[in-house]
Length: 121
Image (cartoon, rainbow, N blue to C red; front, side, top):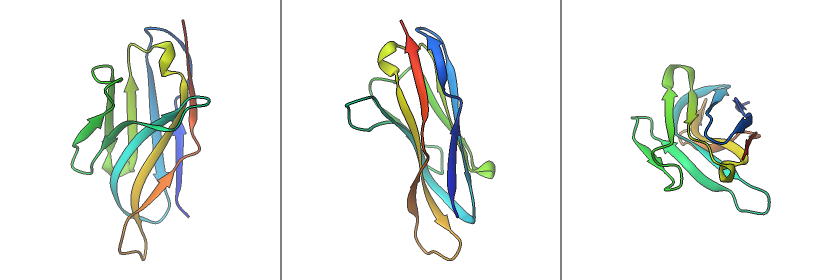
């Protein structure tokens, strides 16, 4: 059974930094694109950043220059370094990974349960 477990969320003051981690476990044959999404109360879940297996990255305009996504393919882990945090970054952050699991020919999307990031003003 595949699991994605996020960690690193918490409370931080505006201007501060946090680093999120998401580790995938299970019978994973290959990890394709991985990424981070966030959802604030009453708002739809939005893309924050994605990274392909080859390291190509994509960011939401609102986080460009402040957030950095990276991955460790050997550990099937994706990270999100968040700097210069703003109160509007407050949300539950979810990890998503497209994984090819044992016995499958195609990748499927898996989601973590989320980690809360709160930025105080």
